[in-house]
Amino acid sequence: MTPAGSGWLLRLPSRALRAAARLRGTGGIEIALDGDAIWLRGDGGAEGEPSDALLALDADLRGRATGDGLFISCGETVPSGAEPARLEWRPLAEVPPLSLPIPIAGDAEFAKAPVRLKPSSEEAPARLLHCGFAPLLEWGVHAPESRLAPLRFAASPDGRALVAGEPLPPLQGRRFAVERGVGYPLGFGWSPPIPASSLRAAASAREGDLIVFLDPSRPPVRLDAELFVPLSRAALRATRDAMAGEGGAPG
Image 1 (cartoon, one colour):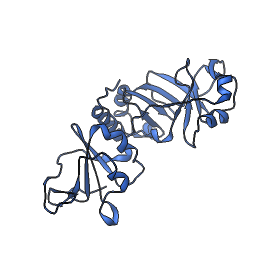
Image 2 (cartoon, rainbow, N blue to C red):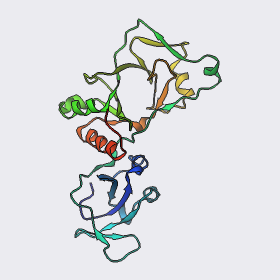
Image 3 (cartoon, one colour):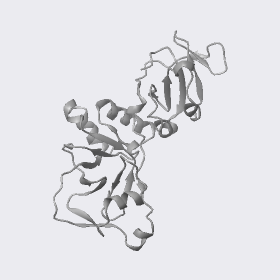
Image 4 (tube, rainbow, N blue to C red):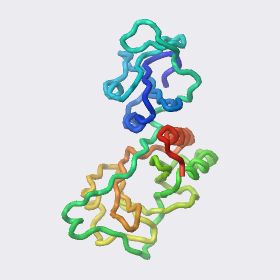
């Protein structure tokens, strides 16, 4: 955590949230939402400066805190204003990137024999839930920590959420089995019976990515591992605020 009154500060427009969230893997960065603006802060390591990746963001204000509540803009030597106060700071790693799944274009094999779902009597445990973010938020802020611990979630700007793990929340939505990194709705299987490894290869899936038949009437989509974060109250609240910053409405 970066203590208040120290380190670098960046202010970005809310539209830059998705770009900032791609840096969740960079440690030591905190985020706060301030109306139509986003603030990022950190200690900058030994140099005391943000990384090149951070400087590449569309920031409209860059600088550092003086330690006594003032802010010095980059290139200046005297304070140019006050640092942001009374903001709720969170680790950037807790904010999902609010991305949509990536459709699989399909190679020649799928063009000749499109992969689709078909009803199946085979039983399998549910390991993925597609639901609205609003009911997930309501459930998550009241559920015990032990109930949240085994779960991860991803969210999209239109108020949808995907929850992965076991046991899943008791919420309304579509439940999926997951077989070797490929998810499909309960009561279905895919046809032709192409190996899961082939589906993943066609989607250029990396370790940790999921291939999911979200819509039974459409081809599968790829869900990158980076879309998911551990399900916690803090992460749910951060996602709620991020949706508000992007103009989305939890559905």
